[in-house]
Image (cartoon, rainbow, N blue to C red; front, side):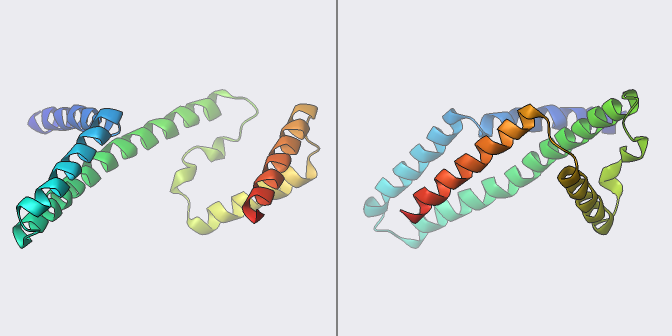
Length: 149
């Protein structure tokens, strides 16, 4: 019971922090802290204490954010997998063996990727897909020209 309550509280906390950390407000706040720290440099004669402050703060914040962001990404990935599994299981033409595909080995995943690539090359695309592929190729060509310039 206690463990479940703690997990729920952490999930809610991690979700809120992850959403907040990715906001423009958080970015501006972090930028302001860096500006204030930089302006304090001359006042503190660019001392070791001045440098240690920003190093310590950024290390601690980064360390904690790794766990919070990993928690939310793991939950999101798990939820996405369940949604995809549900779609596979409810679609009559889909292969049910693709449920839990994330659990297969890297070698098996690479083999499936190759099979899909081969299948894609042998299937004639629809008119809409053909147009989409043309647009992508044109955009790619434009970017290559821009790179060379």
